[in-house]
Image (cartoon, rainbow, N blue to C red; front, side):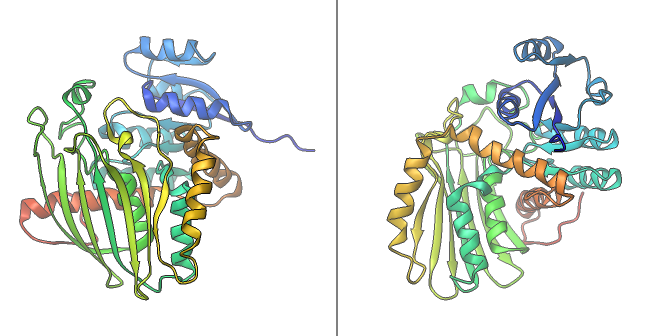
Length: 365
């Protein structure tokens, strides 16, 4: 029997996200952590020594290691495109944390580099792998709600001053690229377009309501028209103390609606990175299936108690990515899929500045 391929992983970054990736890699039989690079180098060294891995002085040194097949990027958002391009040109497959970039130009460079090098590029959006989120997509694909005609995203979270002071890049236009639109809401924005389809235009307002110590927005309200004629509404904010929830609701042309609470409020409180409340379908009026809602919620809650949720759902996406490499197919969330979220938040920022709806496709600055 042929031996299964084991993928060597390199990590760029040694913070909380890279810690998550390392934990996932350690529990996968077809993956192993080779090494890490980070600034300062001492952070990479400490991270590597704790895991029996190598520490590299630079991204270039990491990419020169022939034992590395895949690189997971877990650095500040503004650094993602340059690092993704470097990885692709070195022949490494790229797993990039969201967002793919803070500009369309950066996203396009990353996608183009991966295409030219013939490597896979995936953007982390692990909520697509939640069972309640999968149920919604399957119901839409099966025509159970007719045509999706209205989609809503609601995200009410909280980020305090200590959170923004924890890293100098947080809350800055130059390095983070924005606020709640760029950092906290990409998962829900990704689900909205995954369910509703391509966007035709977006009009939005954004503001900083109660975070005077940051440059960027903490709140945004957006109206979206989709190419198939459906409408969307997005209300997102980091200004609710305590945080409340993240939800996505899709309504169909036959009157049925399907919804998911992707996150309980504890997920959006600074310093609380672990998923403490199970994702759940909180709305389901598909004809003949309404009685299933209570059953699913009970099953999901029971399953949630058996897993470490944050690690588990990241693991599902890493597994999909490695299988995509082996099978020569696209991963579930490609670079192009990740670009859609960048396109949407770019349109919202531009909409307020230009005081008009922004048509899609959105052109890079």
